[in-house]
Each structure stands twice: as structure tokens, then as C-alpha cells.
Length: 466
Image (cartoon, rainbow, N blue to C red; front, side, top):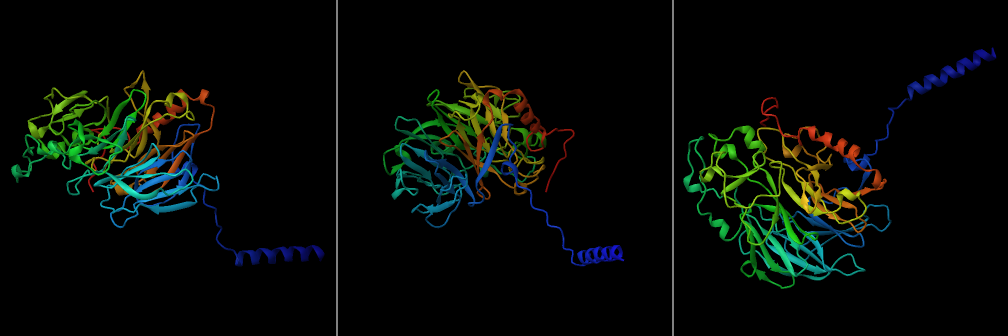
């Protein structure tokens, strides 16, 4: 009888359990490295999850972070972040600015000689930083004023030569200085370019200004280099005291000259150009483009090119990079935290393509270009991947994040900003740097087989039009 009662009791418990059973709640798995794929030995912390659409960022020597927000209304276009608990996450986020936000391509944020320099679309500003204060004091000082209306490719990216010179990008608003007066209703007609291109008189280059002089108009600056379509990624390399940039190559070879360029060529040409800039250099825009397969400057179809005519007399890039990937920041690594092979090399944030039709979009990574004997090796590496969050990117909106800005922290960490939601990662290396080598690099090299990184195959890859 006692045994029977025990079985009855257990049966009642099981029945009650079934009647009151609730769905099992499984804890959400923590996102490793903030969703990023990195070489073994590296890890990533999410400093801030979503500060809002933003562009470049700068990290001060005390760890404070300053971010350029992508806003076109109001007067507080900057964001300051501070970690007061030492857990790697920003717990103070404060907007500031006191200047008119004039466009969504407001981009730059740099710290130089105790000042915070930043730019709207039309103006370069600076504010004095105080060692014990998060927010810079005083009203922003106006350094350079763009006299022209808001336009496409209007980012004002900056670099400093440590001799009082500040370099400012004034990119051209067109693809190839197209002249609409020669437009044709024939879909197979070759689009013509204005010759000579009047935009080169006032844009399409990099100007040098005095970093300490206030209210400088464009006319007071000195044109340092010309023939540059669009540059957002620009940096001074202290190793050889030279100016470097990564140029956005032109688009629409197929649609502008369908007789000479196939849809596949439209997707893989021309290169994004990693350039070393000397005073007086001419990089050939809009009359040329760079073919990374031929390793040559070619005559643009708007000016008589057919994909075979080589352009002479212009400066070649130091490295051709994949087409349409939108290089939006450039950083030469100076720290000691990462393995020695990264020192003096270049990190490039590829924002990702929006028009690599008719194939899948490409880019959406942070790449690394090693330097040897002061020159880049003829290759690039995948350093940080996973921003897109998907395997196939048909349209830009499919990507979860787009890497935008780069900054080096005081301890040698690498900070990366995302332009869509404003996520900020801090990438660290905590392993034994002497054991970092071929195996770790090989694992990242395999990621080049992904649809948004590899060169599309003209014969086997699916053509996507949405």
C-alpha cells in the first residue's frame, strides 16, 4: 500500500507539471566579438551599441571618444563618450557642437595638438580640449569655409603634416564630369564628358591650409594635388612624412559605354586607388580610370576610351583595391599592442558598395595592407569581417552595419565606427604576439571566398537585379 501511494503521488506531480508547463525560455547566446570575425588572438568589445548614424571618430589619450554624427538639423552634431567604470563600455554619452548641421556627409573628427578638429559639409571647425573635461570648451572656431552649395561627395576629410599644414578634401560631385548637353535618348550612346572639365578649377583635389588660421576661404588654401574624384579616407604617414589617401573610383562604365564594357566589367572596374600624394600630383580624373588587372591608367570612355587605350602622364596608385567598395577611412598603425607585422601598415575601412550591379554588393570589411621598406606589398588582407551580418548583400540595406571610421586608442587598440546604427567596436590583441603568423592569416584569407569579398565570376555567378 505504501509503495502504491508513492506511485500515485509521483503520477499526480507529473500530471500537474504537464498541465502547468510553460514554454522553455532559452537564454540568448552572447554575441562573440560584437559579431566580428577577426584573426585568432584578436577580440572585440562593443563600446557603444547604437549612438545613431555617424561617420568618423577620434579617441583621446585618456580614452574619451568623439564621434561625428550624420545629421543635417540642429546644432549638436558631435557626440562625446566616456567609460567611467572601466568595463570597456561607454556609460556617459553627451552631444555637443554649437554650430549648424548642414548635411548628412558631415564626416571628420580628429584630435591634433590639443584641439578637436571636425567638419560639417561646408565648414572645418576646431575646439580646444581640456585634460579634465569631456566636452571641449568655448564656441567652435571656424578654420575653413567651403564657398559652394551643398553637393554630392561633399565630405571634408582632414590630415595634418605636423608642420602647421592641414589637408582638406574637396571632391568632385559627378561621376566623370558628364556633360548633360550631350545626353542622348539612344540607350547605347556613349555618354560624353566636359572637356576641359570645369570642376577641376575649383574641386576634384586636395587643398593645404594653415591649421591655426581662422576663417580661411578656399581661395586662401593651396591646391596640393588634383585629378582626384572623391576622397574620404586620408591620412598623414609619419614614417615617411607623406600624405596618403584611398580614392573612390568612378562608376557606370557599362551604362556610359555599353559597346566597350560588359556588365561584369561594370562590377569589377575600376579600382579604388590607394595613392601616395606629392605636391603637384595629377591622378587623372575625370579623363582616366585605373584598371587593376592591367595595372594601368586607362582613358575614360567619356573622353574617347574603349577599354584598351592607355592614359599617359598621370600618377598611378601605389595599390589598386577592389572596385566600388567605398574606402572611407585610412589609419597607419603606430601602436605596440598588435603583433609586429601590423606596425607601420595601413588599415582601411570599406564602407561597402551600393551599385556593383548586376552582381552582389561588395566590401563591408576592414582590410589591412602590410608595408615593407616603406611601401605597400602587392596584396591586402581581411582584418575584420562580419559587419554585414549576412552572407549575400543584394542591396546596401541588407547589410546590418557598414564600417566607416577608424581610430587608434592610447593603448594601441583599434576603434571602428558603423555609419548605419552607430555601433562602435574596440579591437584588442591579448595573445602572445610572437606566435602570431601564417595560420592566423590563412584563416582570414579563406574569408575572401565570400560573395561580398571575392571578385564575381563572369560565367558562373548569378546576376542579381532587384
